[in-house]
Amino acid sequence: MTEPSVFAEDVSKLKDAGEIKQAYISLKDTNKLLEHQLQSQRRTYDNEVESLRGELQNVKEENNRQQQLLAQNLQLPPEARIEASLQHEITRLTNENLELMADDPTASQEARVIILRRMVDLMEQLEKQDRTIRKLKKQLKVYSKRIGEMGAVQMEGQTSPGQMVDEPIHPVNIPRREKDFQGMLEYKKEDEMKLVKNLILELKPRGVAVNLIPGLPAYILFMCLRHADYLNDDQKVRTLLTSTINSIKKILKKRGDDFETVSFWLSNTCRFLHCLKQYSGDEAFAKHNSSRQNEHCLTNFDLAEYRQVISDLAIQIYQQLVKCMENILQPMIVSGMLEHETIQGVSGVKPTGLRKRTSSIADEGTYTLESILRQLSAFHSTMCQHGTDPELIKQVVKQEFYIIGAVTLNNLLLRKDMCSWSKGMQIRYNVSQLEEWLRDKGLMNCGAKETLEPLIQAAQLLQVKKKTDEDADAICSMCHALTTSQIVKILNLYTPVNEFEERVSVAFIRTIQTRLRDRCESPQLLMDTKMIYPVTFPFNPSSLALETIQIPTSLNLGFLTRV
Image (cartoon, rainbow, N blue to C red; front, side, top):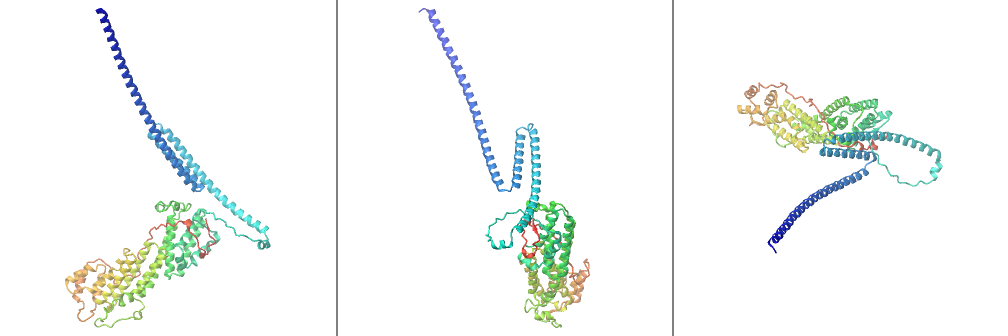
C-alpha cells in the first residue's frame, strides 16, 4: 500500500472517531435534558398529589361538620332548625369571603359585596319567617279554642245522660304534649282583685315559706305584669302595680307587729324590685341574665319610675321590720346583758353602800343572754326561709346589734349599781358570746361587731386602773368610741365591789376632762336607740327560669293561665 493511501485511511478513521465523540456528547446532553424534564414532572405530580390530599381532607372535615349540624338540627324544633341553618349559612359565607381576601384581595371585593347581599337576604328571610311563625301560632291558638268550644256543644247535643251512664268508658292513655311556655301568667281584668286578695291579703307566710320556693308571690306578680306588657295594655300594667303596692301596705298596716309577716313581704318586695330590674332590658342588668332570660325582658313599657316607688316601699317595710325587732328585743336586753349573771359568782359581792337591785323579770329568770341569742337565731332563720337577700340580712343584723349595744350602754350610764369591776367583766363576756354568734352565722364582716364598740370600751373602762396620769392617758386613747360625757359619767358612777378598792378621785376625773376637752363631739350622754342605719338593696339577679315556675293549688290561683 502506498503512503498516500495509508494517510487517507488514517484521516478517515480520525473523522469517524470525532463523529462518534460528537454523537456521544449529544446523546449525553439529551439524557440530561430528559432527566431534568422527568424530575420537573415528578415535582409537579407530587405537588398535585399533595394538593388533592389537602382538598380531600377539607372535604372530609366539611362532611363531618355537615353531619353534626344535621344531627343537631334534627333535635331542634322547626323554628330553631331554620334559624340554625341560616346561621350556619352565614358563617360559611363569611369564611369564604375571608379565604378570597387572603388569596386575591382585589378580586375579593366584588365577591364580598355579593356575599353581604346574600347575608342581608338571609337575615330578612329569617325575620320574615319569625313573623310568620308568630302569626300562625296566634291563629292556631284561636282556632283550637273555637274547635274546643264547638266540640263541647256537639257532645252536649248528641250525648244523652242515659248514654253517658250506660256506655262503659275505657281509660285511654293520652300523651301530654310539651308546651313551650314563655314565663307569663294571663288573667282577666275582673280577676285582679281576686289575685291580690289570694296572693297578698289572705296569704299565710308560714306555709308559703316552708313549702314553696322563696319569693314565689313576687315571681307570680311579675309574670302577670309581663303578660300585661306583652299585650301592650298600659292600663292593666298600671292597675296591677297600684293594687300590688296598696295591698302590701294594707297587710303591713294590719299585721305590722308580726315579724314573720313583715320579713316575708320585705323579701318579696325586694325580689319584685330585682325582677323589674333584671328584665327591664337595661344593659347593666341584662348582662347577668342567660340568653333565655333576656328573651323574657319587658318589651313595651319602661317601669323605672315604678322601680323607685317599690324601692321606697321596701325602705318603709325595712323600717317596720326594725321596729318589730326592737319591740321584741327591748324587754330582753337589760335583763340578759346586765342583770343576769352569766358567770356565776362574779357579782356575788354587793357594791359597797348599795342594796342589790333586782327586777321582777330578772327574779323570774325570764330573759337571759341565752334568750337574746335564741331570738337572734329565730330572726336569722326566718329571713333565710323567706329568701331574704344575704346583703340585706347583714344590714338587719347590724341594726339588731346596734339596738342591743345602745340599750345596754344607756342603762349602764343610768344605773350606779351596774358600774363596777365585776359588771365590766360580765358585760365583756356577754359581748364575746354575741361575737361568737356572728362567727357561727358567717356574719363577722357585716359591721355588727363595730356597733358594740362603745359598750366594749365602757366595760374596759370599768376594769382598768384609774389612779395615775399614765392610767388617764391609757383611758383617753382606749375610749375613742365613747364621748367625754359618757366617760366622765361612768367614772363618777364607778362603785368598788369591796373595801380593798377605791372610788375614782375627783382629781383623776378632772384630769380626764382636761385631756379630752379638745375633742369635737356631741355633748349628748345617751345613745339614740331609735336611730336606723340607711338601708340599700344591692341588685341580686335570680337564676330561676320563669317558664319553669309552677303555681301550687294551695294558693287558690286557678284563674291564672300559664302562657
